[in-house]
Image (cartoon, rainbow, N blue to C red):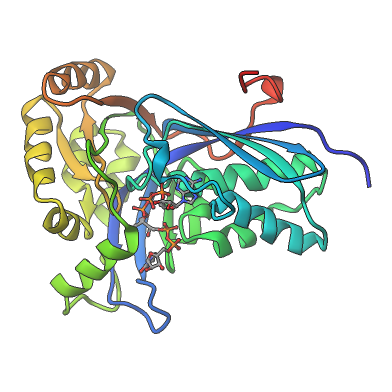
Length: 312
Ligand SMILES: C[C@@](CO)(OP(=O)(O)O)[C@H](O)COP(=O)(O)OP(=O)(O)OC[C@H]1O[C@@H](n2ccc(N)nc2=O)[C@H](O)[C@@H]1O
Ligand SMILES: Nc1ncnc2c1ncn2[C@@H]1O[C@H](COP(=O)(O)OP(=O)(O)O)[C@@H](O)[C@H]1O
């Protein structure tokens, strides 16, 4: 077996442009018909083969690292376990994780880290895992992880793990308002969905209108067709998010929605200039307001930065 090399892999946050949720299946998961878009907020995973495994965390100012487990329960540890089991060996690795994606925010930061870790571990240990096998391991790690590998804009079926790229002819500009308090637990939001929607259909709502809007590239059409079945549950758990959505729309956004299970709210704007103006106006009321555009790439190797992104 040849030696691998230290590798930094970058993976993006996601927004669900459409999130249709059906009644829970027998295994407890909810059937989804969702359209994900990867947006330009990123986490980086640097993996170096080592005698012992370790995980160090560096966070951007707007990220609360307290919610990120470091004692072996991180989704990156699980990624190393599953990839190692697939190859029949233990992958002892020094990991440096740099987070800019809000934690427990509905933007799939953990899933991005898992996807980035799979690719980084594969290179660091020179495993040469096939894309097919990486996607299968990703699906085992979490419903959102396969999308984090492929990125772009894609439809997700099943529990969200069956992903197919879709036509997207726009460059979409988002203002991102993370929660100024705690995150929301994804299972808790799905549970509240079940309480609020005991009559949810077995088949989730499809995104036909939204797919048409994506193909036109017209922001106003996309804004009108954004849809999130978990929004009602997130607002029920965090009523103040309703005020935030109003605030962003008054600040000039075409439309605001809760991102996935929340509590991050994202605002689609007409253009880059529109997003900058909306962000500026929102900053008068909120501590952290970010700008992002999409679609962007899935987990990818930063070729020139292997080993050079971590401060010594
Ligand atoms: C809601 C969504 C929308 O994209 O994202 P987030 O807002 O969390 O980022 C996803 O469905 C989150 O996907 P992910 O965070 O990968 O979930 P998983 O690890 O697979 O599952 C965590 C838990 O969420 C619930 N779950 C997840 C997916 C699904 N289709 N039905 C569910 O009921 C289950 O309670 C499960 O035990
Ligand atoms: N690398 C990681 N980054 C963030 N959270 C993680 C990570 N590994 C495990 N977790 C756990 O996963 C939970 C969900 O995190 P995250 O993926 O950021 O949110 P969401 O599911 O809302 O998109 C966190 O509350 C934390 O307990």
